[in-house]
Image (cartoon, rainbow, N blue to C red):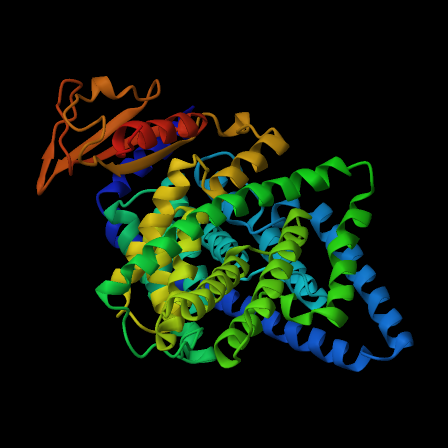
Length: 525
């Protein structure tokens, strides 16, 4: 009890200078998370080269082809061993980061970093259809946690530094610093607190500087966008947004079904189940090698080669099915980049039909491809602002924001009306349900400080502190309104824009998260 009281006084003493401290610590996290994310990105690039070389040497030689399949089986066994050694490296890693910030998980940061880098490398060597962005976010988040442990920071700062690391990871993965900040706020931390905003900006910019210095400043995609779609052509954008909204819902359902399908064959040893995507990769490597790996070559082919509609649809179907097979297995890797590839091919198929049947301007085909990527991302992840900024940074042009926003909004509304949950929310729920996770009793007395901004139109806008329904024993530290700090009495009536700082026991973090979502944030029923 004495240690807990000392920890509480320490947190309260540091709270006043926390903003400046977090910016400085964010810079440190940005350097470390940027370096580990760059290492991971480089490792995956080497993995792609190894796989392509092996396939080219094996093609047409039955003995070498058989040898490659044996190597794939060995890779599956190694990945299985890594998953048993550290289960938290499974999948993209974003649900694990979100669950930790919510107070449900406390993984070993250094084991996750080591296992994720090695596991991701092995999976891409094998050719699994997985991306680097989710793992980069988890790697960055765990590096932020490691720095927090090294500096002996309390849980509030640790959550902020994990968020900073996640921001830096995405920034380094895609040379997209703004998207890194937006994703960390919109999806990971789910809060636009000035504390986390400034520190995430510092971390993301430093990580992007490191990544650009090593990989160059050129955008990830080089689409030849010369003109903008005129207002008279926005009907095409709306229809594309609707299509992406429906397909995003379909994607989420099939993704969850793929995980369910693997669970239904749980009677098989885990190593045998892991061999399924690796053996499929061996077959596809000699039949349809384009769908292997993240899929950057597929997008390059889409805008450098004049693919026929049939070829686009075949590659789209192949990439989609194999992505489900790969991710459903639980192998270390993300869905981020593969879903952008799917979005690009949806846009490619749609633009081909629009040009051939409806006379759409062929010079604007690249616009529809870019728009479809953002719209599908918005429907699946349900983070439209991140999708718009991410695609703009990845293509190196912010001139098509209006068309991106239009399609993303239509896709978002469509997915909402169909009552499809955001993919990472569903994956986080499955992660926790599958592990029957409960916060350890040893952490029950520890406390964290949470800051949040009262949003206009939320249930908290206009109500008193007493009416918020905060968890028992939660201490309201301060209420800041503009430049004034108000006395946080129970009858103080809150207003939109107020910054509320509360101290919460760790065992009540999930209950506090519920209050933040349903009362302090604005959500329509």
